[in-house]
Amino acid sequence: MDRRHGAGGACVHSGDSCRGLPVAKVKTLVYSGGEIHDWKGCGDAIQEALEAAGQFDITRVDNDLNCLVAPNLEPYDAIVFYHTVGSITEPQLKGLLKFVEAGRGYVGIHSAADSFRECSTYRYFVGGYFVTHPRYRQYQVSVVDTTHPITKDIEEFFVTDEQYVTGYDPNNNVLATALWRGKTVPVIWTRMHGKGRVAYIALGHNAESCRDETFKTLLARATVWAAAKG
Image (cartoon, rainbow, N blue to C red):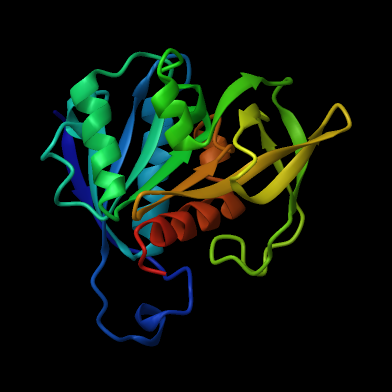
């Protein structure tokens, strides 16, 4: 198991850490792996973004889903998950679900909704699943909740990315949407799983997309929110 640590950077919200008061950093596992996408490059960009935010104590794991098996997740407040397709074992799935049920956080990025296609339990946990995508292009994202901690004071913005069209649970709390063939599809949503928090961000197809400034802000905020630290 490849584990790397890092920390540093600038604050992304107006909590005590922004006022110079000592605040415990969010212990975060950044996981990247799977197939199809450049998971290594995306994992690097995600780790860099969280390090720059300065609020996270980061451990990085690459392409080893056994990090999910209990008790391996116990040290963490949240997991940021970038993975595509593949399969998940019962101990791995159980470890992830129990981790979040107990009050910890999960942030799924882009193809996290296209992972473990045969596992309906995982799909339900995330709150949706990949259906299709148009070509990589620029498109507009509309924020429908500008008061939520993840999307606060962010309005419409443009991204150059692979737009994911998903099937999703109508009970999700949708924070942002985009248009596809005249229909509104979610880009960011949140939900609860037991005592824990789940956030999903459909952006982040490649390393360049993961270095977009708005994406980095959303990522850091989602991780703080999922960890119940903000």
